[in-house]
Length: 310
Image 1 (cartoon, rainbow, N blue to C red):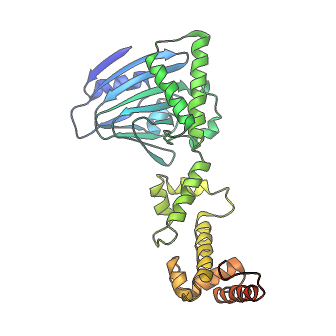
Image 2 (image 1 turned 90 degrees about the horizontal axis):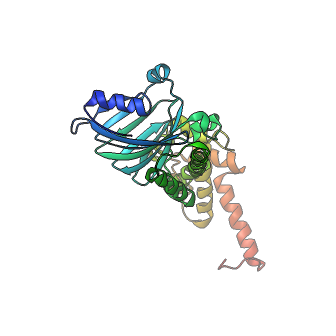
Image 3 (image 1 turned 30 degrees about the horizontal axis):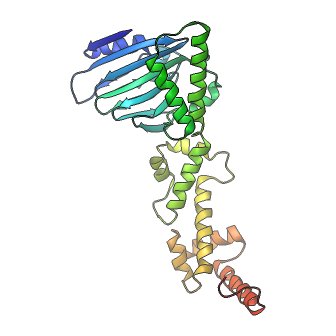
């Protein structure tokens, strides 16, 4: 089934009829027009959607009035698009796909002309625990073997025709499994790794803080803190721990460097605060640690257990 419309009212109706009810706001470009071509593969609706600059909002009010319970996947073909859901902001480049859930608010932002393939399942037809979905949405998948396999399967669906019966059901289920497997690789352990890698790069940056990390990783602060809820250390404690670890290394590597300079390099502007944090972490002051290490090194060198080149 293929349909083209001109004007916002017709476009809003077409989107509601094919997908779910959305609040659509035109962009600053040309008047709203759009095109949707779709076919069914078992319980799955496969659609090719094209239009101009605009935003789509799935608001709490629309969810309450129009309770369509759907899981959707968007495979971006062209354009600059962004999805916001569950505290994450995903910029989805062409060739990437992303999962979103119509039972919770989301926003799509299209900066100009765009084209997406949209795949829509009834949520009860998808083999995933609904409690896990908030961890899987708004995570664009584009790299890796799993993403490539899933993208290939999605693309094949757009080229095939309608498929019903048991074969259609089998294909729809298999594609859902491939998509969720690819997205699951990014959630949440991969996000934790992304955050930790950023911290390593920014340990000597005074601006390193949860707000900076959240912005860089396209997360809300709440989602960022939730990522670390099950970690041995909180986010702030991990940053302090890694800064102290690096400072401890420098105390030994640069024995003539003043302790205050080492502390300042890792964003401890007050030497007293640094000394207290160091003692809390390692059970001794920075000065005692440095002197004790130097004595151990000197003793080892005298006994031949440690060479000067080691």
